[in-house]
Length: 256
Image (cartoon, rainbow, N blue to C red; front, side, top):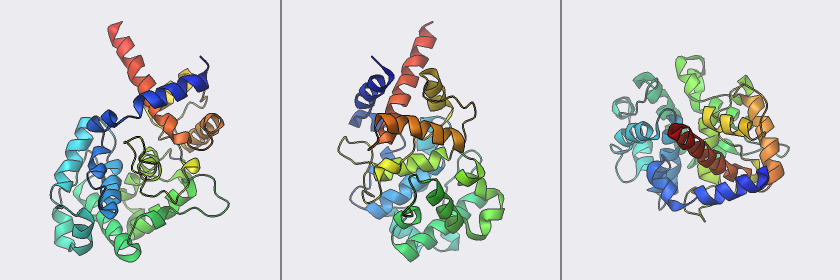
């Protein structure tokens, strides 16, 4: 089996509804009947997607549980005190960061009605890197010069922006296999990038898809090229393959 067949096989094996139960994507999927809330909750969960999946889900749950059945409506109507008190915290995401990001999300929802417009591509763009930077500027506003800015990564500054690429995968890829949401189907899934982190990077290097040592924006570009050669229409679905291969490799290592 060559690398392309290996990845396609593992993508089909992993992208199944039972993947959702132990993954942070379970949170936005609760709001499939309210797309505005699904995208908001998705952004909140993806923003804190580092560390164990269990801890990510627990941290997101604390905040979402306080926002009621319609989190987006809660945020649109919230005042400064509400934003300050919402318990959205995770590791280095502190109260001051939470309030600033929530303020940006609130402004975007009031102005646009959806977060999707923040990530619209320009005619000559083939990936979401530039759109992420434009969204970052709009969401952070004056907070872009504060410590909070590190929680919304900048591809232009060299970041792999793993959490934002993860969020975009959730929103853009179709729901037909019961994992990603597909509520932004007007945005091209062909422009999605794999959410590159230490685990997916290790697997990608191990099977010869990635040679750059750093997990940065240039590595994302290199991996994009390899994955789009295998599946030009839906390269980000191969993220499931890298995830599954990483889990298998870890289990084999533990067995000795």
